[in-house]
Length: 176
Image 1 (cartoon, rainbow, N blue to C red):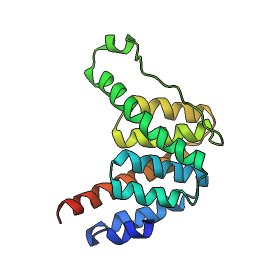
Image 2: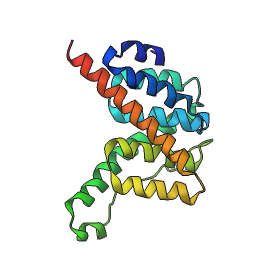
Image 3: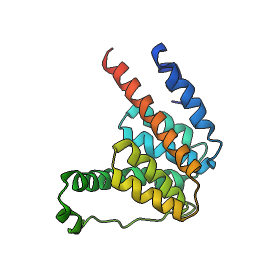
Image 4: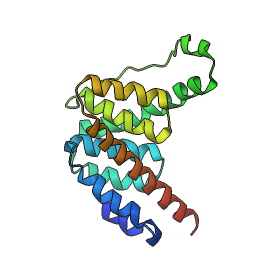
Protein backbone atom coordinates (compact mmCIF):
# COMPACT_ATOMS: atom_id res chain seq x y z
CA UNK A 1 0.00 0.00 0.00
CA UNK A 2 1.24 3.46 -0.84
CA UNK A 3 0.20 6.94 -1.78
CA UNK A 4 0.81 5.96 -5.40
CA UNK A 5 -1.61 3.05 -4.98
CA UNK A 6 -4.22 5.44 -3.64
CA UNK A 7 -3.76 7.78 -6.58
CA UNK A 8 -3.85 4.90 -9.06
CA UNK A 9 -7.14 3.72 -7.56
CA UNK A 10 -8.83 7.09 -8.08
CA UNK A 11 -11.30 7.22 -10.96
CA UNK A 12 -10.80 9.76 -13.74
CA UNK A 13 -13.57 12.01 -12.39
CA UNK A 14 -11.51 12.56 -9.21
CA UNK A 15 -8.55 14.29 -10.87
CA UNK A 16 -9.02 17.22 -8.46
CA UNK A 17 -8.58 14.85 -5.51
CA UNK A 18 -5.35 13.50 -7.00
CA UNK A 19 -3.93 16.96 -7.71
CA UNK A 20 -4.92 18.27 -4.30
CA UNK A 21 -3.46 15.19 -2.61
CA UNK A 22 -0.10 15.88 -4.24
CA UNK A 23 -0.25 19.53 -3.17
CA UNK A 24 -1.40 18.75 0.38
CA UNK A 25 1.29 16.13 0.92
CA UNK A 26 3.93 18.58 -0.28
CA UNK A 27 3.10 20.38 2.98
CA UNK A 28 5.24 23.45 2.42
CA UNK A 29 4.28 25.05 5.74
CA UNK A 30 4.18 21.96 7.93
CA UNK A 31 7.01 20.02 9.47
CA UNK A 32 7.26 16.41 8.37
CA UNK A 33 5.78 15.29 11.68
CA UNK A 34 2.92 17.79 11.46
CA UNK A 35 2.13 16.75 7.89
CA UNK A 36 2.22 12.98 8.30
CA UNK A 37 0.64 13.03 11.76
CA UNK A 38 -2.22 15.08 10.33
CA UNK A 39 -2.59 12.78 7.33
CA UNK A 40 -2.52 9.66 9.52
CA UNK A 41 -4.95 10.88 12.17
CA UNK A 42 -7.30 12.07 9.42
CA UNK A 43 -7.01 8.77 7.54
CA UNK A 44 -8.01 6.89 10.69
CA UNK A 45 -10.91 9.29 11.19
CA UNK A 46 -12.29 8.55 7.72
CA UNK A 47 -12.78 4.87 8.67
CA UNK A 48 -11.55 3.82 5.23
CA UNK A 49 -9.36 0.75 5.71
CA UNK A 50 -7.70 1.18 2.31
CA UNK A 51 -6.87 4.85 2.88
CA UNK A 52 -5.74 4.22 6.45
CA UNK A 53 -3.45 1.30 5.55
CA UNK A 54 -1.91 3.21 2.66
CA UNK A 55 -1.28 6.39 4.62
CA UNK A 56 -0.05 4.41 7.64
CA UNK A 57 2.51 2.67 5.42
CA UNK A 58 3.74 5.98 4.04
CA UNK A 59 3.61 7.78 7.40
CA UNK A 60 5.85 5.08 8.84
CA UNK A 61 8.57 6.34 6.50
CA UNK A 62 8.27 9.87 7.90
CA UNK A 63 7.32 9.47 11.56
CA UNK A 64 8.97 7.86 14.54
CA UNK A 65 6.94 5.04 16.11
CA UNK A 66 5.88 7.27 19.04
CA UNK A 67 4.48 9.83 16.60
CA UNK A 68 2.56 7.13 14.72
CA UNK A 69 1.04 5.98 18.01
CA UNK A 70 0.27 9.56 19.01
CA UNK A 71 -1.49 10.31 15.70
CA UNK A 72 -3.63 7.20 16.08
CA UNK A 73 -4.36 8.08 19.72
CA UNK A 74 -5.50 11.56 18.66
CA UNK A 75 -7.96 10.08 16.15
CA UNK A 76 -9.22 7.62 18.75
CA UNK A 77 -9.64 10.21 21.49
CA UNK A 78 -11.21 12.77 19.17
CA UNK A 79 -13.77 10.17 18.06
CA UNK A 80 -15.11 10.38 21.60
CA UNK A 81 -14.78 14.12 22.09
CA UNK A 82 -16.11 15.18 18.69
CA UNK A 83 -19.35 13.24 19.11
CA UNK A 84 -19.88 14.30 22.71
CA UNK A 85 -19.10 18.02 22.42
CA UNK A 86 -20.78 18.41 19.03
CA UNK A 87 -23.96 16.82 20.39
CA UNK A 88 -23.98 19.06 23.48
CA UNK A 89 -23.57 22.08 21.23
CA UNK A 90 -26.22 21.02 18.70
CA UNK A 91 -28.84 20.32 21.37
CA UNK A 92 -28.84 24.06 21.97
CA UNK A 93 -29.73 23.90 25.66
CA UNK A 94 -27.17 25.94 27.59
CA UNK A 95 -27.68 23.75 30.67
CA UNK A 96 -25.81 20.91 28.92
CA UNK A 97 -22.71 23.10 28.74
CA UNK A 98 -22.52 23.12 32.53
CA UNK A 99 -22.74 19.35 32.98
CA UNK A 100 -19.40 17.60 33.55
CA UNK A 101 -18.15 15.54 30.62
CA UNK A 102 -16.83 12.73 32.82
CA UNK A 103 -14.79 11.45 29.89
CA UNK A 104 -11.33 10.08 30.66
CA UNK A 105 -8.39 11.80 29.07
CA UNK A 106 -5.37 10.09 30.57
CA UNK A 107 -2.84 10.24 27.77
CA UNK A 108 -2.26 13.81 26.66
CA UNK A 109 1.45 13.80 25.83
CA UNK A 110 3.75 11.49 23.90
CA UNK A 111 7.55 11.37 23.78
CA UNK A 112 8.87 13.38 20.86
CA UNK A 113 5.49 14.86 19.94
CA UNK A 114 4.81 18.49 20.77
CA UNK A 115 1.55 19.72 22.21
CA UNK A 116 1.11 21.93 19.15
CA UNK A 117 1.39 18.93 16.84
CA UNK A 118 -1.30 17.13 18.85
CA UNK A 119 -3.48 20.27 18.71
CA UNK A 120 -3.00 20.54 14.93
CA UNK A 121 -3.96 16.89 14.44
CA UNK A 122 -6.98 17.38 16.72
CA UNK A 123 -8.07 20.43 14.72
CA UNK A 124 -7.83 18.52 11.44
CA UNK A 125 -9.76 15.54 12.79
CA UNK A 126 -12.43 17.87 14.18
CA UNK A 127 -12.82 19.43 10.73
CA UNK A 128 -13.66 16.02 9.27
CA UNK A 129 -16.19 15.19 11.96
CA UNK A 130 -17.67 18.68 11.98
CA UNK A 131 -17.33 19.49 15.66
CA UNK A 132 -17.33 23.29 15.81
CA UNK A 133 -16.71 23.35 19.55
CA UNK A 134 -13.58 21.22 19.19
CA UNK A 135 -12.43 23.14 16.11
CA UNK A 136 -12.66 26.44 17.97
CA UNK A 137 -10.99 25.08 21.09
CA UNK A 138 -8.03 23.46 19.33
CA UNK A 139 -7.54 26.37 16.91
CA UNK A 140 -7.52 28.79 19.85
CA UNK A 141 -4.86 26.64 21.56
CA UNK A 142 -2.75 26.64 18.40
CA UNK A 143 -3.04 30.40 17.94
CA UNK A 144 -2.25 30.92 21.64
CA UNK A 145 0.92 28.85 21.16
CA UNK A 146 1.99 31.12 18.29
CA UNK A 147 1.02 28.84 15.41
CA UNK A 148 0.08 30.87 12.35
CA UNK A 149 -3.29 30.78 10.64
CA UNK A 150 -1.48 29.59 7.53
CA UNK A 151 -0.19 26.48 9.32
CA UNK A 152 -3.66 25.76 10.72
CA UNK A 153 -5.09 26.23 7.23
CA UNK A 154 -2.54 23.80 5.80
CA UNK A 155 -3.65 21.18 8.33
CA UNK A 156 -7.27 21.77 7.33
CA UNK A 157 -6.33 21.31 3.68
CA UNK A 158 -4.75 17.94 4.46
CA UNK A 159 -7.92 16.93 6.33
CA UNK A 160 -10.14 17.95 3.42
CA UNK A 161 -8.12 16.05 0.84
CA UNK A 162 -7.75 12.87 2.93
CA UNK A 163 -11.49 12.94 3.55
CA UNK A 164 -12.25 13.40 -0.16
CA UNK A 165 -9.87 10.56 -0.99
CA UNK A 166 -11.67 8.20 1.39
CA UNK A 167 -15.14 9.25 0.23
CA UNK A 168 -14.23 8.70 -3.41
CA UNK A 169 -12.41 5.40 -3.00
CA UNK A 170 -15.02 3.92 -0.68
CA UNK A 171 -17.81 4.91 -3.08
CA UNK A 172 -15.93 3.31 -5.96
CA UNK A 173 -15.32 0.14 -3.94
CA UNK A 174 -19.02 -0.04 -3.11
CA UNK A 175 -20.01 0.25 -6.76
CA UNK A 176 -17.86 -2.66 -7.95
